[in-house]
Length: 359
Ligand code: SF4
Ligand code: SF4
Image (cartoon, rainbow, N blue to C red; front, top):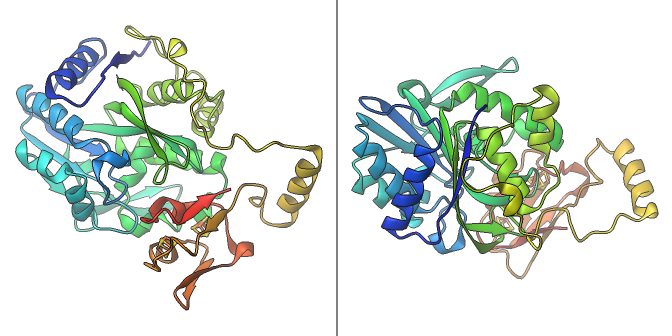
């Protein structure tokens, strides 16, 4: 049985992080690092300051890199490729760039270095670091996610597909369930050896880009990323999330694990602001939703993005990423064509001015 280690980690000070990481590593099946090339994939969703808790925290990345160096890693590559910005730019504001430099690791921009992989019969560019590395580690952030309810270590690897190449894939996989199946294929292609989730400060509410930071006080790690994501969802208080539900249907037992340290069932945060809660399903709304769903491509029963004219600065990031071409800018405002929208929430994810809510 695989193992999933969850331990207290109350802040981002170096001694606290070092203790937490070593305790997790000692209690799970951590791969041998000595003499190896390691690719560490944090979540660097956008060019945002660490206080917003949108990215894996730079101090946690630096502490882990220090340990990997001490374990004798030959070379360490760190990288991510956000939807609308250069990975390097995002790494700068979030201070991840300085953490990478301080530990003599190399930052990889997947837009510059990628190779095609075939997934479900389609050639998709993916980070060249996946092929260069002997060991691949996913380092996700404890956050809610509009489409998948929670983002985690499996979905984190979707970021190995460079920049806007990710967005048209939403047109092929339009429901949370089909998208979950695709994420599993991407994850498989990445050959991930180990996964961590930074849950010192997590995000609740309108995640993954516009939610509210919340102190969770945990660090989590496992050789089984599905078990890790299941534990994360449980701590958030979800009964089920699309990724784990789909994964268990396709591969029963894939997310099973033992918990040698803290038990996730004892860590459930009852008042965590989860996705899709707070909206009552009356009989009338269920009937209308089902009919709309039948006539309109199957997604219109889900909440839609709402654009705030007051907050919008017409930066066009949402327009550029929208795979359904449902958005345009006219006279300095976003024009939204509701009928075209497939509810992928990419626009919400990339808006840097909190001008999009999902309701
Ligand atoms: S809604 Fe957000 S992402 Fe879209 S144009 Fe306005 S500020 Fe930019
Ligand atoms: S408007 Fe937003 S949610 Fe709708 S398809 Fe475009 S990016 Fe996706």
